Image 1: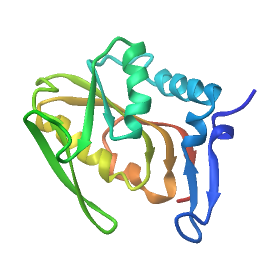
Image 2: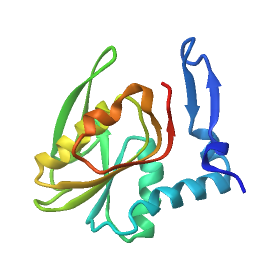
Image 3: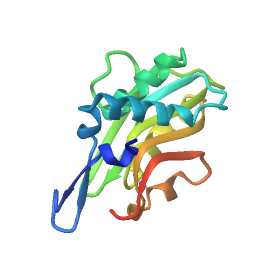
Length: 174
């Protein structure tokens, strides 16, 4: 039987020398790999009481939607600025070279809602940290953060101190 890691294509020296790119598209292109990824991420929620799944644009949508569907929970997208049609709340955060802004509909989360955040990968942790701020700005409580893959060498988990964080695969490098 294959392990989850067997479905992830590793591409050396991309986007620059010394980096190993962990390609999630190879998981998505294999029916067994996709099924296993969703199942393994969903297993982290076995004993978690929560009200909604938040998915980060765009690969968090891919994994968050089937989890929300399977567990009969609402799905809330976090999008890049300017992509949502109704009134939003936003948070800006720093990137390696510059900054970015993400948004969520203002009415997506009610005070006291318990929320699970889902994304494909944690690297430096900036996007998910900003997403947590969005949830909390609306009065929600993040009860779990789930990733398919984690690049531990980039220390993104440090930004999520105090939150319950799980990753299906943890790569020690960058």
